[in-house]
Length: 316
Image 1 (tube, rainbow, N blue to C red):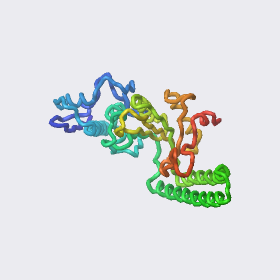
Image 2: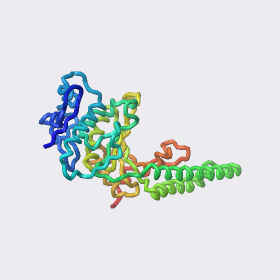
Image 3: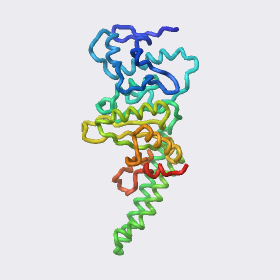
């Protein structure tokens, strides 16, 4: 076996040094890098383990811990003659799980409830390592430009109708009935443009309370790393408001038009205990997010594409 050494302070570490205690052995296989029991609240503390190796009781910074761990894990993997081609658009990003990073360590070092936005940004990400490449920045730029033009055209037409009908004394209800078909046409056109450019990503949205966000995120992240959910997932970080507002978790699928896959992911969320028929959630295309089609948008468009209740009723 080849020996790979890495310096940590004044101590030279080997891949063997970096291993968690025996009761927390890690597995590398179709399930990704996770512990045998996949415990989020594990008994071992990787920070204490590294500190003990370095002869210090001072906790090491999370960024140092994460990227030191990944470097050593990569070294151990060099002996694999035929590594599986895995995918991660967030490789090298401090705000996301790395392919060589055990999911358990990723979760412990970036807990969403307390991870500050000033440290990693607005979101923590994890990708499905068995997924395929997602749309490029150029493809999204074309989609967003075309979508913005569609919205601008809708506004122009809406204003013309409102001006004309108000001048004739028509009621607001009559004006709304006249505008609604144009609004729906514009909404459909935006989705068509997204399809044409391959920008079909969308997400199911969960809103756990702050005190429960670490648990829910651990379930979502672990399932995503195993390839059991969609293409990726993200969770909102601590924005300074503390525990006053719910945290958003997005579970992505690659095609909002693929109802079979959209429903599959929804059903899996149900199996994981994160949704139920009495606790509905919404599905939103990414193109709506990029165009700022939110709950109270200026175009009066519905921001979500599907509701879980209707998706569960699909016969596919």
